[in-house]
View: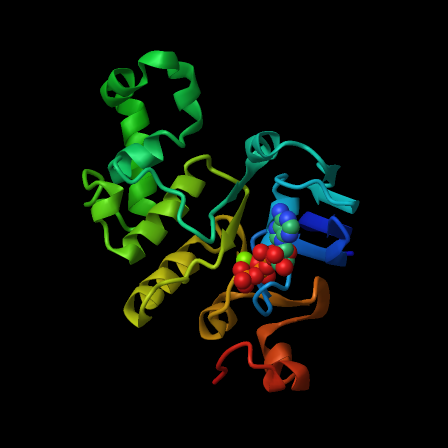
Length: 250
Ligand SMILES: Nc1ncnc2c1ncn2[C@@H]1O[C@H](COP(=O)(O)OP(=O)(O)OP(=O)(O)O)[C@@H](O)[C@H]1O
Ligand SMILES: [Mg+2]
């Protein structure tokens, strides 16, 4: 596999009982690129993220980050190495403001112990860092709004902000456009385009237009196997992809 990959999966198998969900999945995510993953419902895409980010230990195979074997480490340990993820179903504290959602995700927060709320709100440097993260995801003016009151597109952006708060080297996004209308998808594409280059991104996505416009390479997962891997142009020309009903392609 690509020797310069920042993050790599080698021969991953994942079984739940007698159900094989991932079979010999090998993927390499080069630094600074956006790597896309697509495939039908139930193909094993989220399971693959769960293995890569430590939620599940693979039945076989290896996960490498910066060449280091991280297979079987806890999600917490993997996160602390510089790996963040967003979730297919939003994972925000709805009663907290946008700023508070980012604050609790900042690494320095752990130093504040139990008296968190008061300490943190009085800590200028933490709040400046939260403000910088909110700016980065286009929510600079919305820090004081409770998450539940934000439009869905802003909630998606906020979840990316929460993932970025730890200043990760690699960001895994599970269906970031899910539930969004066309306008919000357009804004999210702008945000992801801005982030590209600053952080290595791996995105699962059903919206082919979104993914093909942003990804450097795309892997197609079907029945737990990587059946295609290539540039958007190569996949656009691929008969299997063209004939599948994975989505609309221009
Ligand atoms: N913890 C689990 N125990 C048993 N089966 C599971 C578990 N997690 C996932 N699966 C099964 O693995 C298969 C792949 O699921 P997964 O969520 O990875 O698909 P996906 O490609 O992300 O689909 P979608 O596009 O709908 O999100 C499904 O059949 C699912 O039911
Ligand atoms: Mg999924």
